[in-house]
Amino acid sequence: MAKVVKTLRTHWKKSTFAAILGYYGLDYAYDRHKTFLLMRDYSQQALAHGRRKLPDGAKNKHITLLLNPTAGNRKSKARLEKYAEPLLHLSGFLVNIVKTERIDEARDLAGIIERTNVIAVAGGDGTVFETITGLLRREDAEEAVLRYPVGIIPVGTENQFGKQLLKSFRNDPEPKFIAEAAMAIVNHRMRPADVMEIKIADTDKQDEGEEPKAPRKPFYSLVGVNLGQYREAKKIKEEMPSFFGQLFTSFWSLLRVQPLIVKAQLNYIPTCSGCAKCKKEEEEKLEQSRAKAAAEKKQTEETKYPQSSIWSRITSIFSRSPVLADSDVLVENPDCGVQKSICIESSELNVMVAGGGKLKVEIGGRLGRTDFMIEGLRRHRGESPNYKMTLECKEIEICPVEGGPEYFSIDNEEFEVKRVKLKAIKDRVYFFVP
Ligand SMILES: Nc1ncnc2c1ncn2[C@@H]1O[C@H](COP(=O)(O)OP(=O)(O)OP(=O)(O)O)[C@@H](O)[C@H]1O
Image 1 (cartoon, rainbow, N blue to C red):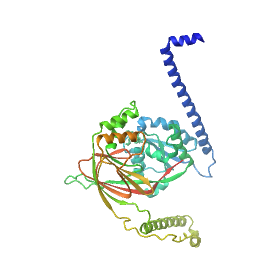
Image 2: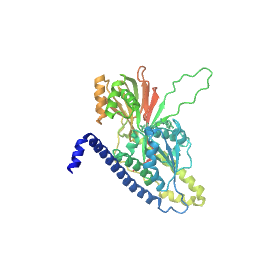
Image 3: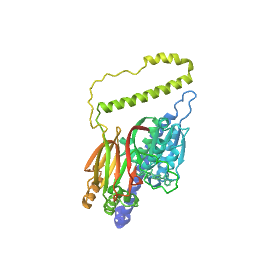
Image 4: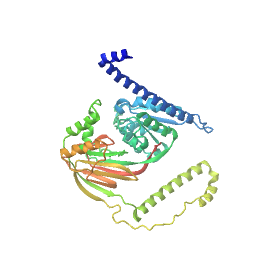
């Protein structure tokens, strides 16, 4: 023993190096073992699904998985193969992986996909944004959103929307977070989510004699729109090599960004907490969708079972929706649906999807360099941002004044600044959730 201690002391540099190496080696092996046990557990659950007997004549479900191989610093494919794909196979899904080869390919594919039961996206926020835009731009969008629920496999860099969907697993290690997303598809539990419709104005000049261009189609965001100095700092940070620490990249990007002021006029319709006017509108919409669904049901019943039409007429008398008594008498809010306008001069402007058919508008102050750095470092530490003003609305139009930023982001994808109209659409797309 004394000899060992003496050798360690004599070669203390080598001993220290070996101790550090051993520590990291053991830590790595322990992590691998934990992931192995975790994946074994999930695999057993998925296999139990796969072994269930299908009803007579039923076939295994088909899933089309759009994979962006460049997402997550090109680690998306490896993450998918390790933590999600095996679970989908084990659960009996017929998995068809389609790798995107260019920007916007996910959007084009989502616009034409047929003959599948589920569309899944393996990528980050950008790929999800493209897929949802493709799905909602389809001519048969109303039907497609019901026919194709969407699964999210969060293998991108930031995965803001994935973290919203898998809220309770957002702080778990990567294998668990991704495997839970795959298990959400396996367990087939869904919930609808709001989207923000974004119409960017067509202000490009048309050359003489040129055919008039078709109006630009809308985009559909699940996270939100960002404009201003913090967005620019984030872009600088994303371009920095990942071997620099997080604190250093945050500090350097905040320091390097040029001062920028967003000048714009905002025209918006504030949300109403519920008055007689909006309740009436809501009831009218509900009545219309009920009538449409009933007409579609009747048509399918008549084509399937023509002889049952008399019987279905008799049963329909007894299955009318109940008339609800008005328990609260609502008054009309004179401001309901009325447009308001404000002019802003601010370091940032964000419009986020807030849920419940609402958008949340966050307007920052006009910050000097020091305040901008302090606020940026606070946000880096995970503290909630300070805004000069926030408001909730259903729709908003942003009319930028010249001299502000050149670009803005939709779900972290860059677009040229133009006049934009944003509108919340409640419960538009169905997603798989844990
Ligand atoms: N084969 C490809 N080559 C280059 N870019 C691609 C390819 N396929 C998709 N893209 C583009 O990659 C961009 C980034 O994708 P995405 O946002 O999903 O990943 P991320 O940036 O790593 O994740 P996050 O946005 O969550 O941080 C998207 O704009 C998408 O259009």
